[in-house]
Length: 435
Image (cartoon, rainbow, N blue to C red; front, side, top):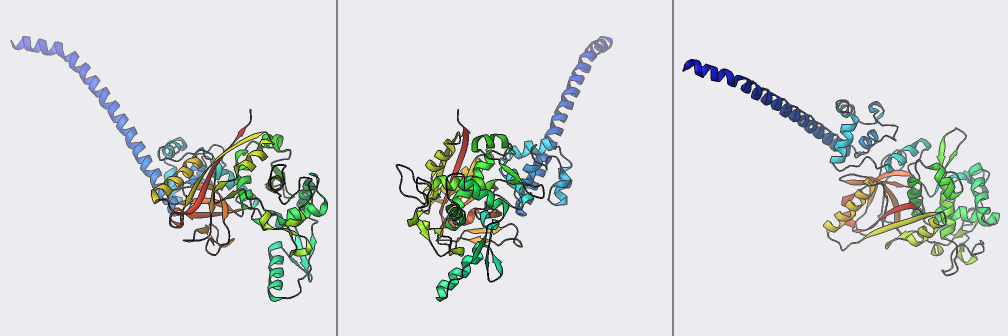
C-alpha cells in the first residue's frame, strides 16, 4: 500500500510541479503588476506633490506642462526648468511620458499651448499684447525734455485742472516701426494726419478688448506663420536690429481697430467714415502736439458686460478667409457660488482644450486684484476706483487662480475675488479655416 501511495504521489508530482510553475508564474505576474502599480502610484503621488508645490509658488502646473510639451524648448529638459531643485530631483526619477500621462490623469492637458506661446514672448520683453505698444514708438518733446504719451497727457490734464496755459508739445514720429505702421494705415486710403490721429488714439480709448482679440488670433496661428501671412497679407513676425523675432502685433491691432471703427452702410456712425476719413464730430483736442484724439463715446468695444461683440470679430476674420465662433458666460452678481464655479470650470476646460479664453472684469463691489508676477518691473492693479471695465486674456488656470495677460504683462487673479465681486464675464472662442 505504501509503495502504491508512493507511485501515485510520484505520478502526481509532474502535475504538482506544473501547478507550482503556474502558481510561480502567476505570482511573478501579480508581483510585476503590483510593482508596476506601486511605481505608478508613487509617480502619481510624486507628481501630485509637484503640482501642489508649484501651485504654492504661484507658478501653477505650467512648468510641468512645458516639460511634457514636445513643441516647447523646455521639453524633457529638466535643468532648464525655473523650478525648485527638489522638484527637479523628483522629476529625474520618472520618464517624461510618465509625467505627461499622470498630468493628463490629474486633469491637466499638456496640449494646451497657450501658456507656452505667451511664455515664448518673454524673449521680446512682453507677455501677450499690450494695446499701448504704439505709444512706445514715438516721443513728445517740450521744454527740451522727452515724454511718452501718458506723461504728456498727465501734464496737459494737470494744466487744465489748474487753469494754466496748456503746453504745446512737438511729436517725434521718426521711429522705423512707427513709420511702418503709419504707411500701413495710409495704404488703406487715409491721409498722413488721419493716420497719426488713429495711431495716437488707439490706447486712449480702451483698446484692451482689441488686445484680447489679437491675443486669441495670434495664439491660433502659433507655429503656422505662413498661413497667417496668407490670410492677413503681412508677416506674423518681424525681426528687430538685434535679430530678435518680434510679433507683428501692432499691425494686427491697428488692422482690427480700423475695421471695427469704420462706419458701415447699415450701421451707426463711427470714428471712421465709410470713405476712410475721420468723423470730425468724434474728436477731442486736449492732446499732445495738438493732434486730436478720439472721443470715447464713439469707440467700438469688442466686449462689454454682455459678453463678446462677436459679430464684428466674425466679419473681420471672414474677410480674411476665416470663421469665428464664441460663447459668453455672464455673471451679474446674482449667481450662486456653485454657478460661478461652473463658469470658472468652463474656462479651465477650454484652456486645457486649446481654445481662446478672455475675462472681462468691472468696477464696483468687492475689488478684484490683478497681482503682478514681477513687482519690481510693474505694479499690481485693482478694480477699486476704476471707471470702466477691463479685458484680459486667460493663458493658464489652476485650482486657485487664473494666470492672465494684460498690458503685455503677467498677472494672476484669484477665483475668490471673482466670487466675492460676482460681476464678470468669460468669453470662450475658436477660429476655423473656412472651407
